[in-house]
Length: 248
Image 1: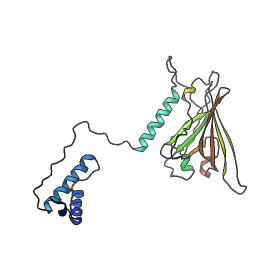
Image 2 (image 1 turned 120 degrees about the horizontal axis):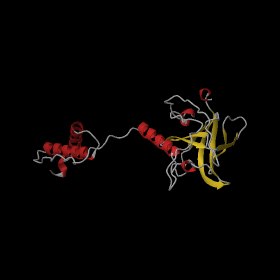
Image 3 (image 1 turned 30 degrees about the vertical axis):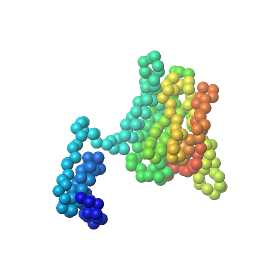
Image 4 (image 1 turned 60 degrees about the vertical axis):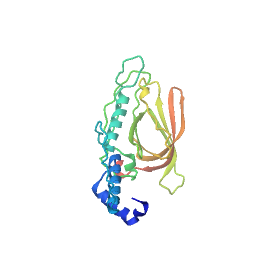
């Protein structure tokens, strides 16, 4: 074949035939589709060129992709497991104290903000108080963090300090700061978690504190420090609004 035989109508005809005969976006399908197109071009040009079918690489069958919902469930299960068993070097791991409030896997702060559809009903269940004999008791302030592309991450803190106010008197929205507090004297403090600040897209976290009727849209400030055996993490509140009637 010569290049002058590969006219636009012939290429379009060959590509249409190849797309109908070979489907799929894996590398072997792409190669086979290209071969079918060139064979059709050769046939139209009355050339004797024939294609060689692409050989599929031998090996293990690639498992199907894991659905996002399964990945999120597995992530939450891992976080829950880390919270129950803190890594103590040189010692056998011991189960941590069960927190006061049970994690609600179906809760979504972003859905409460109206940013996406709520797929599961929100339920806040409680467990009886469990006494802990140590320098500091277990964290009992349940807080939900959610970010686009990450999902919902539940975390417990010893205290969550909220300082927000209205920038304008007639505005229902508030802004300010939230400080997460974790007492390092708690013997399972290795399982503590703070929202990371290394998001290149600078997307905010949606935050819901279990005993607060407000919803917060926050940004990490990178300001995190330890003082008097407690670790503090400062978050900037971009927007704070009251929860919907059904959420209160």
